[in-house]
Length: 402
Length: 80
Ligand SMILES: Cc1cc2nc3c(=O)[nH]c(=O)nc-3n(C[C@H](O)[C@H](O)[C@H](O)COP(=O)(O)OP(=O)(O)OC[C@H]3O[C@@H](n4cnc5c(N)ncnc54)[C@H](O)[C@@H]3O)c2cc1C
Ligand SMILES: [Zn+2]
Image (cartoon, rainbow over all chains, first blue to last red; front, side, top):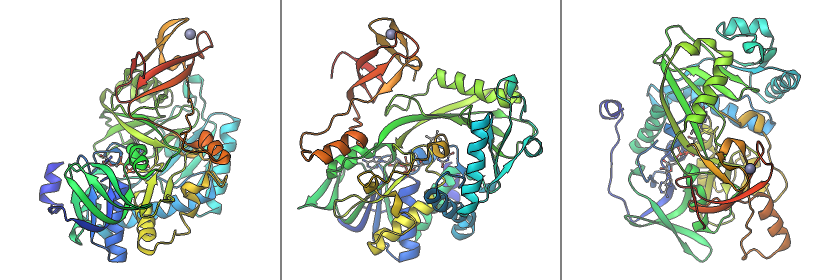
């Protein structure tokens, strides 16, 4: 990791200034991408990103890196498709190898309800600009011959949807490429700087208080992942967010090649192979709301058991590592982006277990909002006001795990 | 984390036997009835610290259990 930073990525550190036009709280993918797009698309470079630990130390460096647009509602399909496309060109744009790899994603169905869900997904995706098709058992076998089509006799694979643009990228490199691109254009990033308060003048947010002193800001963007409730409270904003841990694990090297990303609706797990050949596996959130990063044996046992049901070759592998991130879960499983009702205070949250894929489009759209003061059409449905307007965007079946 | 919930009827049991139940707490500052309804339906206090919460013992006595838990450590504590 350090090797990459020191030899390739050029990060230049600065002393904090007293004031910035834009202060972004949180050096995860969404904060860094917003800074990157402010600098590259709008020429706004008097920007600081404040990160309490190190950049990418939150969920943006802990995720399983699935990139896809096969969501279940039009608003989401359009938004995530934009992000899938931005990822496809991010390497050329930043001139950094983020290890982006198109793998194709199979979402498997084990019963009638599942088949209906995957058929509907393919229809909605096609109608709103993402490429997804319904596939039967024969095609599934061709795409991923390692799948036990009998599902251990209990979870037979009856069909599924195939999303050829499904991809992965190396998470750290995405964070670093965006940070470098922003810094090269004059953006400041301050690590080990925790925001402990917001400064207000009347009803307007005009800066932040950090553990190293105050910093003035034209506008403040909250991009703090699972820790968002605390920061929003400082602005007097109530959020529909609950913080839940999400775990994942990786096995040792699997000697054969495993091409696609495979997900199961019924068994609630997903798997892909890393560039090092390890099998990377994730599942659903822990049931208790929590800020604890501790991993548990129950998750390993339950998730590994479910994964082996469909991928019996996993039996011969060993688990190398397990880890946890804490996720900002929204009640409708859709993100919350935009204005907050408090002047000078913007928010990007509700990224839950699904926000890595959204980093480029989320950053692009939030940058446009901050630069122009107008909410772009692509993210207008995702505003915090949707709960009061009774316009929630329920999409649990698409966002639930990855 | 492996968490055991102390059920007064069944003793300490793994959290996987229970279903989480949010106890809504609408701040007193919110006075408008519609705003209170909205807050009760969607908004979450989500504290980083001790909270009172309810768990339904689905795979046990099928009764509600109330506990105080520290969300920073997942430790169950005596009171808030
Ligand atoms: C195990 C796991 C697997 C996942 N798999 C996928 C996947 O396959 N595909 C996908 O699309 N998504 C996935 N996700 C979700 C994805 O990782 C997140 O949604 C995304 O990284 C969120 O980015 P972010 O920038 O909003 O938050 P983060 O990356 O968490 O960044 C927030 C940053 O804010 C900092 N911070 C917090 N409070 C303060 C403060 N007061 N002052 C200063 N800094 C502060 C934190 O230190 C942190 O670095 C997964 C998540 C986990 C945990
Ligand atoms: Zn009980």
